[in-house]
Structures are given as C-alpha cells and as structure tokens.
Image (cartoon, rainbow, N blue to C red; front, side, top):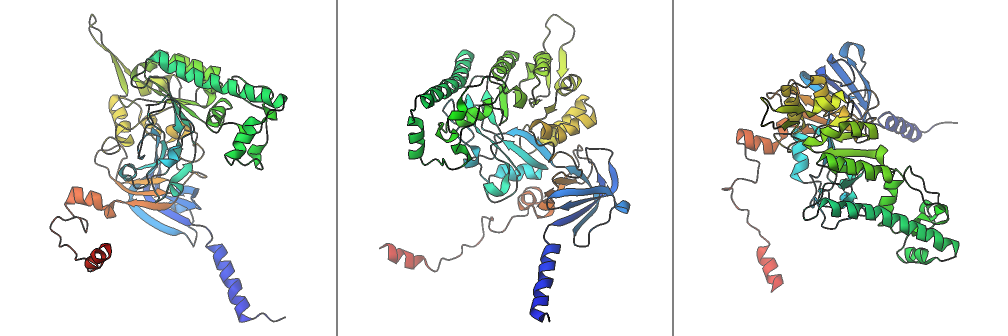
Length: 468
C-alpha cells in the first residue's frame, strides 16, 4: 500500500506536536540556593510542564534539545518566596457580618490590583489570600500566584482555608466573640441532628428546598455519607444527601470533618488557649495554623502539645518585657524561640513594597537568627505551614518551577530582583518594569506625561448628533 505525501505530512506534523507538547525551560545561573541542600555554583534548573525535573551543576546536566534556555551567569537563583497569609489583592478585604464561611475570596480577588505587581517585584510567587480579621468566621480563602489576567489563571488552590478570629473584632468583647463562635458550631450540630431525625420519620422539607434552589442531586453530593471527624460526629448522617444541607453550613461541616485548613487569629496568650480549646472540641487541631501576637510565645508549650500545623509570626519579630525594677528589659526573639520549641513557623511581610518577606528575613539575621532559619521562614517554612510543601518553597525535582533571580545575596540591601519565573515561565523582568523605571530613572511611560498632545476624536461630533 502506498502512502501519499499528504499522509506523510500529517504524520510528521503529529510527531512534531508530540515533541513540542510540553513547555521545556533551562535556566543557567551563577549560583543556585536550593533551600533543599548545599548551594550549587554554575548551576542549571530544568523545568518541564511547570515542574522542576533536574537541578545540578552545568557540567553534569544535559539540556534537552527543545528547551528554551535562559542564561544569567552573574545572577543567583532562589526559591520563589511564600506569603503564608495576606488580605492584599482583594477589592474588599472584610465583611461586616460575623459568620460568613459561605463567602469565597475568589469573588473578591482583583488580578490587576497593584498589590500583585508589588509582591512579584519583591520575589513572592505564592500567596495565601484570606479575608481580614473583622469577622468571627471569615469566607473561604485561596492560594494564588501573582501572575495572570484572570482569577482562574492565578489560582493555585481554591478554598484553601477559613480564617477564624479568636481576638475580638471591633465593637465586640472577647466573651461575645467566643459566644458567637461556639454557637456557630453548636448550631451546625443541631441542624444536622434535626435533619437526621427528619429523615427517620420521612420528612423531606430540606430536600425540597434544595431542589427549588437548583442543587444537583444526581452528582456525588446528592448522596449521603457518614460524618467523619475527631471532635464530634452526628450519627446517621449517611441517610441525609449532602446536597440537601444548607450551603451556608457546608463550609463549617468541612472544618469539622477536617477537609479545609483553619487560620486562627490570636493576639494574646489567652486567645491562643481559647482557640486551641475550640479547635480541639470541634476536631480541627491538625489542620490549624495560628496567626499569633508578640506575647503568644508565652504559651508555646501549649501550642507544641496541641500539634497544630504551625504559626505565622507577627511582623514585630521580638517581644520586650518591660522591667521597671530590674536592670535590663527581657527581650524574646520570636523566630529563635519557636525554632528551639520545634514549632514550624512562617514570617509575614510588613508591607508589600520595601518591607516584604526578604526584608523580614534580613531583619532576623540582623537580630541574631541563623541565616538558614531566616531563609527557610520565607520559603520552605511557609510552604509547609499552608500545606504546599510538596509543590513550592525549594528548588528541587518535582517542585513547581518558581524561581527568583537576584543580582546578589538575597538578603543584601544592595541586591535586586532581576527576574521572576513561575512554573518555568518568566513573569517579571526588571528591565521592562515601566513603573520602576519611572520611579528610579525618571522614564515616563508612554501616555502618562502631562504635556502630551491630546488626540482629536474624529467621531465626537457624530456621537453628539446621535445623542440629540
């Protein structure tokens, strides 16, 4: 049988499509700080389909023939930094209602917000975006990368957690704050128990209401399943289709069943103790991360014993005990204290510009914290705390290709972020940063000068006639 030239061409095109099916990148730099081992001089990072496949010395790594090569022999590669919790980048960071877990920050994240431009300029490639602290139970957060023109393009992990404030919101006492919080979970339990009782006697009001709201009972959520959890469990819930449960309560049920992370806001030691008690009662200790205040180190033993996932330190980094009748004040360096207690922790930015994560790490070193500990607290540490330790935080095989290329030591005030790569693709180039050029060099981007001539609108008269 003869094969036509058209068939041969089609076969060749198919093979070419297979060969170029995935994105392949090779980044060659003067030094790689992997945060997963010793630094590598004159190294290469190979990235395919967004994941790192090889990291090693240039003399030992063979670059694939189809890889896009980026060479920067004078620069230092560093893992993309991870912001463990922030309320930046949203058009509305807070809600006025007390209990709002049915909301989702996906509806509030603004891809063109300057905040994302600023953190990218600082070398941050992963952010856990959560609502502010002006609720008792906030909406569901999401983990994003600061690159992309749509929320879907930025998304790393949706519904990544829910913030719960033990520290009272403005206008509330601690007693009222705790009462609202406890009642939210108690109300969930009463509702579920009532639905089980209704199912036993044949009542289906909840199901009919759910059908009227257009919920899908043909999908997996249309089936019932037994409740799980290490706190309290409602027996017989397998008889109740999950789709019939009020959608406003489902996020709370996810918390109790351990399917979503919880970020507890605790500004004082007493807040920590109350928060741990509530987390223990409702079975979400293992997925809890604590955002703590400067004095909370005093209950670090209780935090350690509770087995929470980790803590996010306050931006102050240290706490000073005033001693009016002693010769010297007592200063506790928080990163050192939590390191000694073997409690995982992450640093938090003071702001998104000049005092970002790298600045906080440099402050730690200046205060006497070990350099490796400080660097880990902005990379691998926060990645583990927010549950992304298998994906980001280090430069090693299998991780996302998130790299920051510095002009020198990442903690030097003289170093600059020159390039940022997310999943192997360059998303920031300092040489084309028009806003930075305008600020640092006085170069005005086109269309921003005050004395530029006004372009005449040749259709203005036609529109005015149409309006008349």
